[in-house]
Image (cartoon, rainbow, N blue to C red; front, side, top):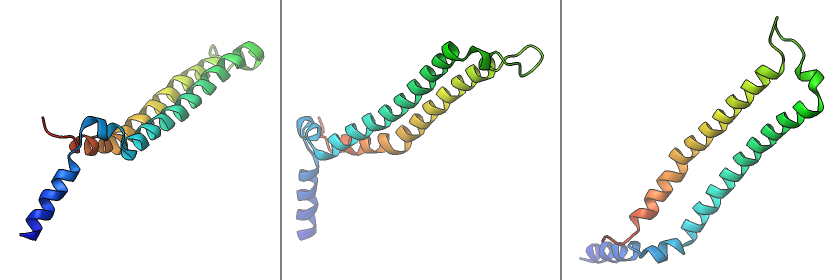
Length: 114
């Protein structure tokens, strides 16, 4: 009988209103973590893109060096920028699928059933 009472008490404690979940430390922690991950990836992307653009504007001689008969160094570097953006996107997707989404589902499970 005591086990049933503890289970019922635990279930009552777990179910929260949306306001309670939004104000909970767990929710604030996961939102802060999402902003941190997004911010770091955003800074990496901006630094790489703007670095490439600044390099184009300041050191055309470097980018105009031939790496083949007709291809200059600027072309593979531009392709590298696109690949780097895809890699950053993949990092975010893996993080979101493995860490963020399970935490969100756990928090959603705490909501009162409607």
